[in-house]
Image 1: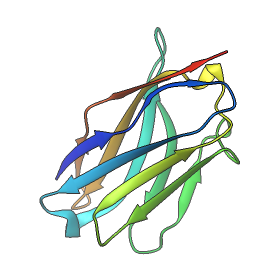
Image 2: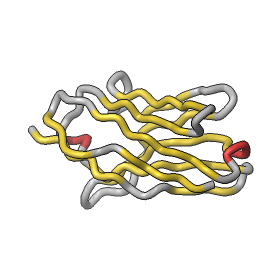
Image 3: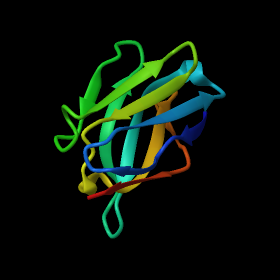
Image 4: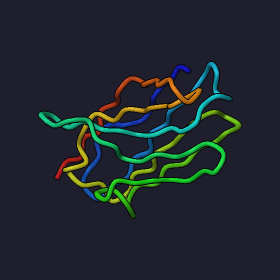
Length: 116
């Protein structure tokens, strides 16, 4: 599974951005997808995940209620709608896919910068 991320950029606090992650390859074998982020000097952290089939979602406490993860199965694309952005959301955001129950793929990171 290959992942290509688009979106990101610079936005003022309180603004919105949408990230996209397009999957290709053995997309039928994807078990779950997710977004992670890494701020300077910090470890990579989970932002949100979405399971294939059930569509069950999970969010980090820091983004719950502001971010929405979704997936268009026809387009094999996952999204992260980010609203009410805060400066502390500034990070490089990564797309992740878990597939065939044992493999993992990462997309390239995209910078999200929220100015105060």
